[in-house]
Image (cartoon, rainbow, N blue to C red; front, side, top):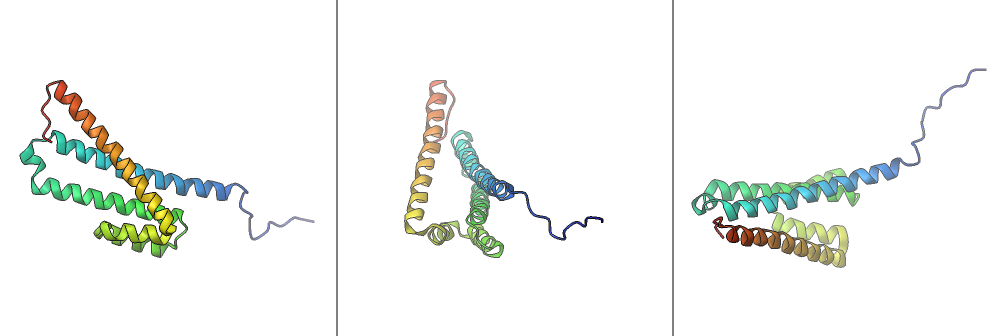
Length: 150
């Protein structure tokens, strides 16, 4: 008697863990993109000549990069929070246009008040670290005789 293969193949037991790892990795990559782009922008503001750093194209490019980085983080995090794909993409779209309003609303809806406050404090802590890094590089460059524009 020949054995037939079942129509439905059971997923390996570790596939959920692998999927969870992929989601967490995408959130970390989006977070890294955000913080790296912020640090690069701050370094450029510090080391570019003032007339170039104040130019419209630089300001608009920096603003667009910030909005894209925030939107990518919101999308990755919404997927990690098990939001429906359509809802995650809606938050991403709004975050790309108005991150100042969308991110607090998203954090409140995805984490509640306590989780949103914790995420805001974590953001402020990371922001202080990035700014401390930029200021440290500025101090060291001044000691080495390299002109910094901030």
